[in-house]
Image (tube, rainbow, N blue to C red; front, side):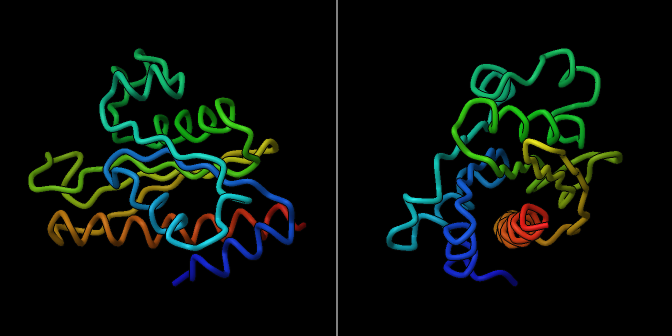
Length: 159
């Protein structure tokens, strides 16, 4: 588990600005970061792109990408993370898109969440299957995972 205060201190020491692009978490990662006093010197902005239209309008995610892969996909998580970097002054972005529940489908069940982590050098994506934990728990697990990814991104920027 990554402590947001430590994460921000590490970003501050590295001179790294952070941005978030969130769908199913609705800004919860940004809230965790901005709960820390003084976070404005390293948290640049957050994008809450809950709808497909918002993903396209705010982050530049191509509608054809959403049509082809669905909003819950590593392809869209990748585009969200790169779009967050392009539409901000940050150098590290995390994105989240998933099925918090209730419900889902056979191919995209409740608890399936896709993440992106972007720097100017590269983007990594991954999918986590948290399972049918209930909406609040899936969202909470997603926030924790996003914070861990940001910590991983900071380590990558150090090297």
